[in-house]
Image (tube, rainbow, N blue to C red):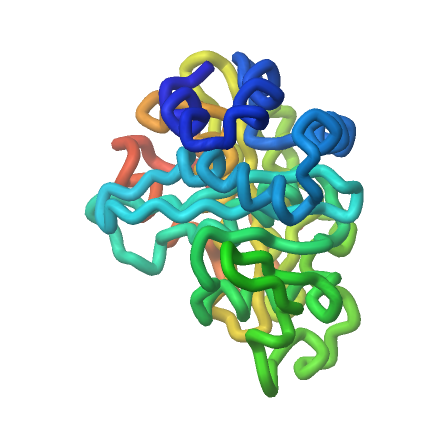
Length: 293
């Protein structure tokens, strides 16, 4: 078990500690399957909100906060009933706009596991405006709830007079299954991995479909898709999602061996400069770029 999880485990109720500990061994990827959730509920007698609130210390343990030193944990509950942990992530020495919020972290974790919507998101503190707007892009934005230590309310209660995809004429939302049918002229496995994720990315406003694939020294590969937002600025870049997923799998971000971006050559924007900037906070590597058609 990773050291940060061992420390967080001590903050859980005793009956939950003993029930969850076997699930936190090597290979734990910040996710509890629906079957594991059912097992934890049966073992502890906790209902869904109680369990999710109790597990928040485990989520917050994944925080990377060299700037703020303020850990935030979040747990997204998918339509399947699985739980996806997330935490805030900051890039040392880089602009704050590169930061990943805990809610974005948990949601991208769920999205990477092909969830098509969320029932609720549990957070250690009230979501900021940035995260409220980001969550308003989700397929289930009108029905999902926000669970806090002292409150449980619909997301829309946090967003009076909200602005979202429908205001720009969109009928789909973030987490809608996508296939953009992009193609590249490369047999490079890393490029093909990035292409697969670029085809699942969400960019209805710019058509800037994109994804990043990170290869580590141990051979592991983690990919991040671009997640666009109707309000533009809360969009989640693919480099941030890739780094987030690598962190949730306990990867050592200082051992990135290659970083490759695949993006739509006909998109209105490019991720190249932003991705290179974020990468520079972690490595001296140069970003590889392939344009897809």
